[in-house]
Length: 239
Image (cartoon, rainbow, N blue to C red; front, side, top):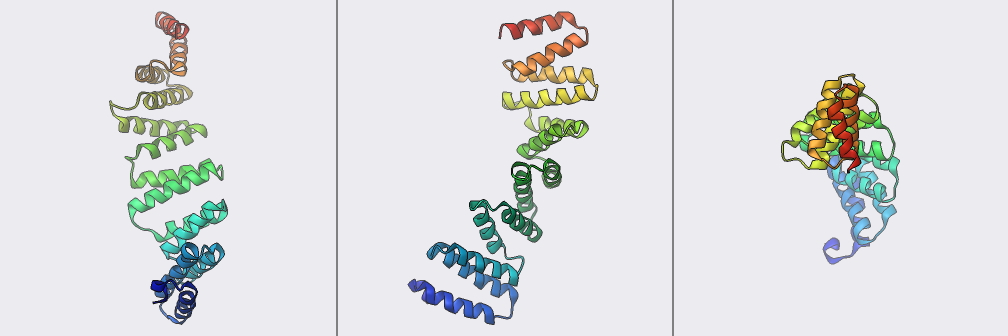
């Protein structure tokens, strides 16, 4: 009744009293979530909201609404330690594969961009890929991280998978980058013919890409295919 009439302070008093009396942890947590929302949305009381949401997860650690609210508030405050902690708690509470995929990608992005922990980000992206290996953006990011960490075998594996996902109608620049990186990876593994094929496909995907043209020309030169190398260098000069 107090909530419907907008008597927020009276509503909070009643809800807090009820939340402390309720014996069932999940129901008590739901009441603290309501207290948190009133503080956050109606009274603009961030500290009161955080306190209520924390009481909710204290009563029932799987209180997703409270955890999501705390995660969002931590992100807005750039409290990255709190953000990561709440995100991990949400991951622990969620079992639905699609939801876990999104959360794993979110955590991987955090580990990469904020904590600069590429190896942990790789682990998280790979766990996400075990759930759904058809999400191109995730697979490309996984390949890029392996590439950055000079893990050439794994980088090659994921670039190949990404190229398969792209299909024949892929964006030229994205396809070029994937083929080029795969070529570089093959070169590092001393698989020079494979590297040549990748560079050729990179140039085919985007004929304007100077890095791909230069890599192709150098590979042809290294394989002593001088006439083809000359043609490739001429394209670079006339670019």
